[in-house]
Structures are given as structure tokens and as C-alpha cells.
Length: 84
Length: 329
Image 1: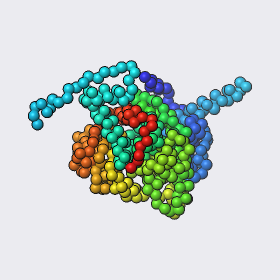
Image 2: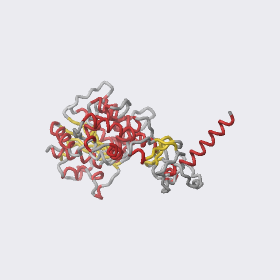
Image 3: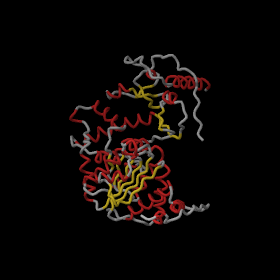
Image 4: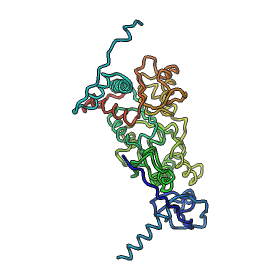
């Protein structure tokens, strides 16, 4: 039987002004890249880093882990880089 | 009827052994003849008759999440082996075919899960199947590009859903894709509720990129004549239905509009008739509309299509043998 994943029980980080916190995103390459739905419908460069921000950023956020996980990945990357 | 008419054939108890094949198991179901086992063995017999009837056009209706759950290759193989002539599907099943054709996956999951956690991780759930959001998103991007291309090539020509699926199938490289295999085998794929799927959402994005004269045009009514014409040209008609809904009714409409009614029908569903919904409506009820002939070989199997359908197809393939070559109508 497949076990159900356990919940982390953690609350998401306070909302910073990252694209991955804005309402207009979907996952593209989780967690580091998102697709911005606003840009996509306008045919602009719509694949952006989760930790990017733009002037159309909205506080109407999604309750997701994109930014939290992207930050973890970035920090882990910088630690590994430091070890080298 | 007399009393003895009710007591004609005793139940023969099933015998199982360690070496039995799928068809041998189905034969044991036939010996019982009862409940789901009896209905499944009847379904195998009816599907075999459809396949062996050189004048029969076989329609396959696909509803419910059967492609994400693992029936994709079964259906592709049926097309390759000429066990089906026409497919009528929900848009969603072909969307999930495309997700895999473009490199995405469906994952074994669980029904007991914190769905808000899945939402947080951008993972969608179809009962106990998980699908990452990025597979849908990447599909949207590719589909929008395909829509642009198809619209450009067709220059204002309005497509039916059959023509649309053919255009999509021609652009795929995945040899296991239902749409690709159907394109190669020239098997029409109708999507009578095409907008109720990711195709509809991708279309919306396509419309945001283009002005009216450069938009892809798909006419929901155009396919009606196409599928009815197939029915008119068919001497005999059979349908195998997974689920029901719009795909089942589209086939039945074609049959009754052609003035013939279906000669064979196998419906696999879990739905009940009491609500009046089409997916649970009995085949006897369907006779009242003239969509299925009174004397048609017909059975409704109440069960999970993911179990029933592969058993039925495997048993019939075994009966036909590897060398069997169907003469299509």
C-alpha cells in the first residue's frame, strides 16, 4: 500500500515580493521556475525564476511552497558551492 | 413461461489453477454465469462477435480518467490491431495522452492525502493518481504553439474535432500516443465536448495571442455529420463504452440518426440508472430511443473499467490469436 505523505505542519514563510508568491503563477520547473500567467497571455517571456519579482506583483497570493522550496534550494546550492 | 423454463442451466462452480490464462479464467466466469463474472464473460463474447463481424464498425467511447490510470497503451494497441474503428472520447483523456506524449507522467498516489498540501506543492490529484502541475503547464505552452501553427496552415478553414485531433496526432512523435497511432491508422478520434478540457484553456491563451482572422476555428457541430455519415455507411455497428457521458451519447445519437440503432453494445460503468443520467442508463432503456436495436447483443458490466476492460480485451485477443487479421468494415 502506498503511504500517504505526511504534512509538514509548518506554516509558509512570510510573503516576500517574489514571483512565486504572486497570484499569477503556475509551476514550470518546480520549485525554481514558474510560468507567469500574465506574461504568458501577453506572449512575453513567461518562464521566470520563482524568486524573481516584477512591478505587476500582487499580494493576492497562493498558499504554496514554491518560494520556501526555491529558497531552500538556493541556500543549499550556495552551501555546496562554498564547500567546493 | 413454465416453471421448468426458469430452471434450465445449473451454475457450474469455478475451477481455478496456477496455469490458467485470462481467457480460461473468463471461461470459468462463464461457467458461473452470475453477477459481474457472468456479465464480463458475456461482454467478452459480444466484443469477440463485433470483431469477427466483417461488416461491423466498432465505436469505442472513453470517459473517466482511464488514460492517466494506465489504459493508454491498451487503447493504442487496439487501434494498431484494428480492434476499433472510431474513438469518441472526453477531451481530458486525450489531454492526458498528450501529457505523456510530451514527456510528462502520471504518478501512483493515494486517496488519503492532505489535498491542501498537494495544492501547496502544485500537484493535482485524480483519486489516487498524482499529476504535477508543470506537466499541464508545459502542455499548455506546446498546445498553444500547435494551435498557432494549425490555424496558420488552415487559414480560416473551420475544423471538426476529428480534423483537429488528426492535426494534433500528426505533430506527435511518441509512437505510444493514442492520437499519434490513430493518425497513422487513419482512425477518427471525435471529441464532442472538446472545450471541457485543457484544450479549452489552451485555446483561451491562443486567442490572447491573435486577432480573430488568425484564430484556430473548431466547429462543435461539424463532427455531427461526419460521425453520422460513418454510421450510415456501416452495415452493422457496435459500441464499447468505458464510463458513458457525452462520448456514449454521441455514438448512440449517430446510430439513431442513421436510422439503424446499434447491433452490439458493451457498457462498462459504475453508474446507476435511477438518477436518469446517461452513464447509468440501462441498454434496455437505450432500446426505447431506438439507439440500440431490440435484438442487439448487449450487456452492461457494473465494475471498475480499469479491471474489466483489460480483462475483456486480453481474453478476446487470446481467442483471436496473434495471426488474426480483422477485415474492417
